[in-house]
Amino acid sequence: MSSAHPHPKRLISLVLAALLAVSPVVALAATVVAQQEPGASPHPDLARPEIEYAYPDQSVWTARVDTQGNPDNPLLKVASALFARAGVLWHGKSLPAARLFMQLQEGRSQFAMLVKAPTLDRCCLFSQHPIARTELRVYRYKDKPPIKTISDLAGKSVITIRGYSYSKILDFITDGHNAITNSSASTHELSFLMLKSGRGDYLLDYAGPAREVLTDHPIPDLDFDVLAQLEVYLILSRNYPDAATVMSRLEEIAATLNVTEILATVTP
Image 1 (cartoon, rainbow, N blue to C red):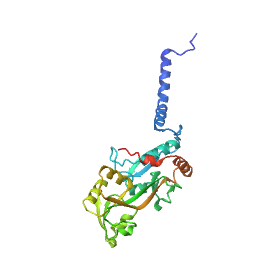
Image 2 (cartoon, rainbow, N blue to C red; image 1 turned 180 degrees about the vertical axis):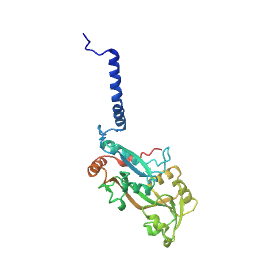
Image 3 (tube, rainbow, N blue to C red; image 1 turned 60 degrees about the vertical axis):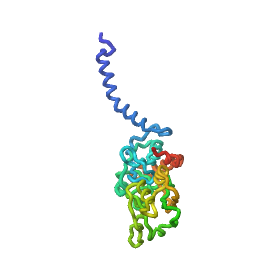
C-alpha cells in the first residue's frame, strides 16, 4: 500500500518551490511597508501609476544642498507625508525650471508644488488653497532708501542670484529702459558678500536662503523690504488617473499638516 504522505525529498522540493514563488511578493510588500509613515494608508494603491514629484533645482526655501548637490528641499518632506497618507507611491526629481514646466505640460512629471503659473492651466489642476508661502525680499543697508515696489529699483544698483527669474521681476531688472545695474552672483552666500563689499546697493533673495546665510554670517546694519508674497500650490497633472479625486484627497491631508513646522526642518 502506498503512503498518503509525500516522500521527504519530495516534501522539501515542494516547500522550496513555494518559498521561491512567494518571495517576490513578500519583497514587494516589505518595500511598500518601509515607505509608509505614521498615519499612512496601510494599503498603497499599486494599481495607480507612481507619481513623479518634480521640483526646481534652484530652491526658494534653502541654500543648503544634499549629498548629491541638489537643494535640500523641505517640500520633499511635505510630499512624503501627503503621498504616504494617500497611499500613493512616488519619487522626487530635481529639474531646471524650464524642463520642469515642459515635463508637467507633457505629463511626464505628474506633480509639483509651485507658484500658480498660467502656462500650466491647461495641463494641470491647482489646489484651492496654498500649501505654503514665502517672501521675495530686497536686502539693503539701513542708510539706503527702502524699496516698496518693483519700480523703485529703476536706476539702482542691484545684485541678483543666477538661476532665478524672481517671478518675472528679472525681466524688469534686465530691461535697459529701467537703467538698472545688475550684478549676478552664483550663490546666496556670494550675493551677500557682494552686498557687503559694495558691489551693489540692493540684493534680491528669498526669505529662507537669506535667513540661513545671515544666521551663519551676520551683517550689521542690514535691513530688508518685502517685494512680493509668494503662495505655493499643489499641482497635479490632469492626465493622472482620477486626478480630481486624488487632488481632493491630497488637499484634505494637507489641511491636517503643520507645513510651517515641516519647512523649518531642513537638514543642517
